Amino acid sequence: MAPRRRAGRPSQPERGRWGCGSPFPQERAPINAAPGRNRGTVVPAPIALEFGPKWLMNGWLIGRESSFYMKSTIEINEANFEAEVLQSAVPVVVDFWAEWCGPCKMLAPVLEQVATELGPRVKVGKVDLDRNAALAQRYRVQAIPTLLYFAKGEVRNQTVGVTSKKAIVENLEALAPAA
Image (cartoon, rainbow, N blue to C red; front, side):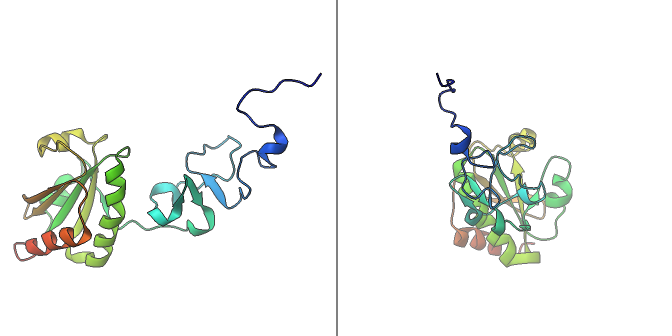
């Protein structure tokens, strides 16, 4: 009699040589792969920091396209908020977001484009609400994503929800003379 196998778990030949369901495990790695588990190639930590939408495909990271992706947005927290936002000489847009928020993930590549295109004329920052709840409470953020536009240390405008790149750029250009 053949040994019983657990339901839902494929046998070794079905899983493949590398122990995962991917036919190309050297090219793909599950984003949530943990070191020590036999789930294909684990993406190194510096690469796994931030990915744009073209690197993601059905929950898999395409390995050969995942060269170092430079972030042009600034991670803002309670410790660096005053230096990066309130004392900034250029207009700043601050995105209040959370990792579990779908619309926030849709807005992230748009903010990356704005930060890349406008370069040193503006700052684009991101505040993770799960880690910096006090900042959200201070600025009365009640829904995410929320974009706050700062000039000379004061909130000049606010956008709630996903917005277009054009609207973000227009709001920032309106602040440029004030800064």
